[in-house]
Length: 102
Image 1 (tube, one colour):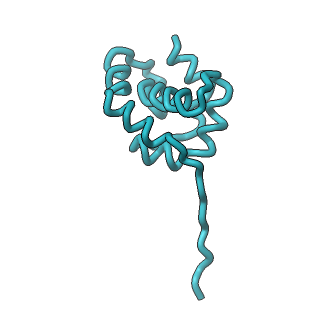
Image 2 (tube, rainbow, N blue to C red; image 1 turned 135 degrees about the vertical axis):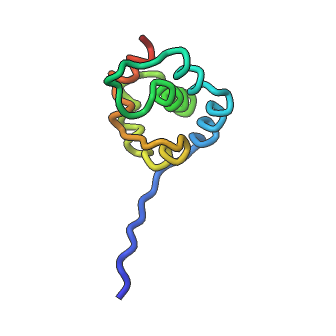
């Protein structure tokens, strides 16, 4: 007998296009080069956090910090594929986004 197939789906919208354009512009590389993070920082770099947040802002037309983590939880596979990084929802918590602003 064959095993049941498990299918997951995510709403993609314009996110791959926006993240590709941000990558092409080098936003992540510039931020990581000029704003190094503390040695205890784990997970996505500050540049990747900013890139994904900018993608969220442009896609959703919403800049509020508290909505990014739940939004990311629904798109972890898409974000991981588009960034080439292992993305966790915790990487886009309010505290991380605040560090981008600091």
